[in-house]
Length: 234
Image (tube, rainbow, N blue to C red):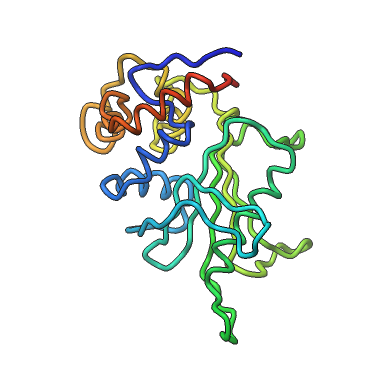
């Protein structure tokens, strides 16, 4: 087992670090940056964070565990998770996780099924496996559509995958915020000196929030313990 070294900046693909940077009320601007880049059709202006661990609806069934969960200003539900290790039937896992936010919208005795959109955003450090025409696409989104003419059946369920294994650019070749996020998620923990754009604004806040030394003592202890035993898949 190869151990991760603990650098100046936290590895944002670690669950604890991701929640610390993007899952706090004081950091909603960082979460909004990420969500608006990865779900550009939403134009989200505000979110309300809620409990990240969803209980199963029946005893004996598997629970859902999310890194960050929120409701947007238009009532949409977004569940975000980061995943380093590839798993069998990973798409089915994401589909199962989506059911918690769907079922929570319909109370007993309600006759109408008017569901608000649910988005599952999965940020992964692996490829799910695609056909030869896929190319090097990092971001992909899925909805429920008719097979032949692709008519949308419902706007109530969406999946967004960020497959960072396809992202190969160096910092000097990046010219947009989406790719800056890709780079930070994949490489921030490897950096000792940051590029000039991190000196001010939202990027300065992201970098400062990701500094391991700035973590609360309990969070820092959990993060270091997790990283010291994490198998390096990169």
